[in-house]
Length: 188
Image (tube, rainbow, N blue to C red; front, side, top):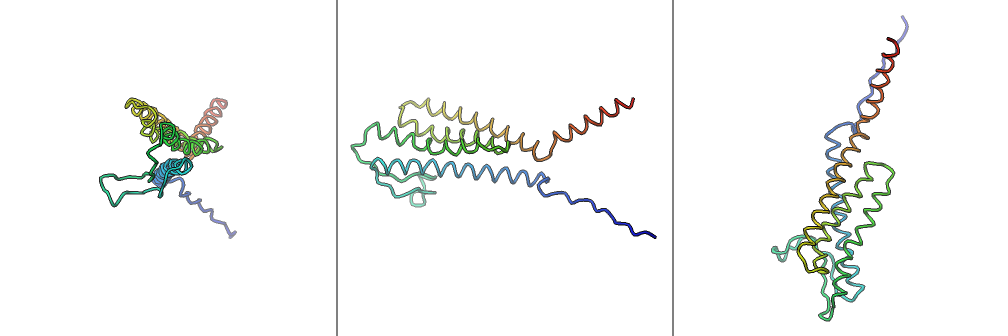
């Protein structure tokens, strides 16, 4: 009796698990948003120190004053600071996050490339409040919020769509189905 080698079915890769995909997308988005906020505040701190403000750092959650929660740069600027200094401080947060967006857009891997749109949208939203120091009109904040949300939504839709195609190889399955259909048509 000849010995036969039993063929084992390959185990499905963990990356083909939809739960893994959801966790991956959530963690990637959280990392991008946290790094965008950090770079935004680092931009304010860096430019503030360059133009003569006194800064103690970036505050993550204000435990001493719960009325002012969140993440912000702790800067004290001289009273003689003019509109020019406020403009540079207002633009610095946005200017520091744009390179991250451009770096994401430079990825060759298409799903991650769309993270650049998410970062850019989030940067515009964060910059909306800072633009109020440059233009004293509340409408600029709502325009920035709308444009930023639009970029973020488009980026999320493209990211999810491209990642699902990449993750589940749906395009390969469609191509295989077309080849089978063509083969059946040729046989008839």
